[in-house]
Image (cartoon, rainbow over all chains, first blue to last red; front, top):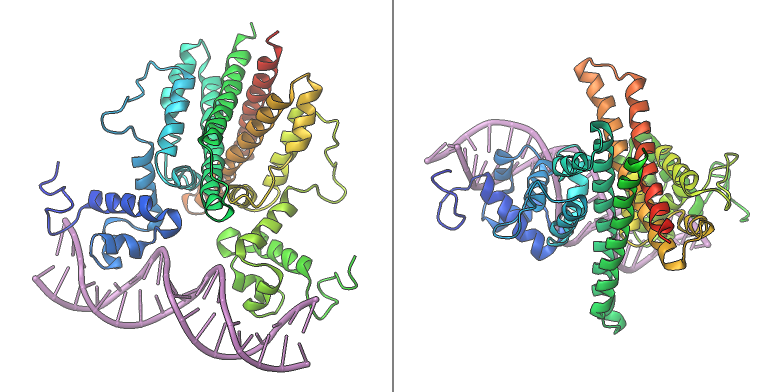
Length: 202
Length: 202
DNA sequence: ACCTGAACACCGTTCAAGT
DNA sequence: ACCTGAACACCGTTCAAGT
């Protein structure tokens, strides 16, 4: 909506330019390399300039988190009519799509700087199953926490596998990745079954 | 088992003294204040001395994590015969018993420096329900991830409530704490029901 | 509205050297 | 077996000042 929003066209930067610079640094260096100084360098600016756009680093990271959990361009935007498993799977995929995605989102969440992603969608899906308001809330939170916690750990293990493969000469068969995805799906099925089961009590 | 293990008696320190110093700093300053320099100061030693005991800070934090998730002194040591909910509740309580407990454990876990706490107990409890090996593994992991993810967020909200109460003049009624605990229990019931439901399929 | 330049008060880690 | 002292290469944040 602003006059200048392209990163390479304008002389000066907006909030959005800072966030996309951060996303670039993230995908190249990962979370450990995501320092204010490197972000500043990416848009050729002094570190202190970033503090005009964001009050502190965590606020910037929260903006990055929002970008991560929000639906991407052309891809299927999980519509409000999707079921619990589909919404949870979509969140899982968005987290996996960005380096250290689960960790960044988890910390923004823990600091209370980000809404529980997918919560509204999940709650309406739960209500669609005939669940009351309060239980729908619990069901949604339970699912989100499972997805984020599981993905956090999962993403780390994938990274460890890559690093380990380099020095241990054990090449990581894509089979392992599939096993992990299967494990996530199996866990997700358990939680969804639990939501249904606590409902079904007549 | 060593000749010297009391912190205030010996002249020099063992691994254990470093860990308990870290635990003291943690409970007084929280995770943000848990720097190598402050830990060193606590036992009146140079920072570099800590690197004789641990290769790096994360390894030290992993030792702290182990202490957090391991059963305490006199309290009920969750015996192997306990059920899924009891084991998960015990983990929840241990995490809540230490400032920023869930966050520390979560990060040690993510770095692969800590075993999934309670996993073995949970798996044998699951097998006691007549679940096969592979499904018991998935059930255990699902439960642990739920507990840690949920507690992480929960612990942050409690802290935010304390901080917020200071400047917002809204005193935090203990009712809120109870609501949170009820929400955790409700979520836990969902996951446990899910484990049972996926099993019960004949 | 957006940025510079310089400073402050920290970090984790390494290393030669001591006892 | 355990520790000192000093250094290295970083951090996030603040602030007066510029355009």
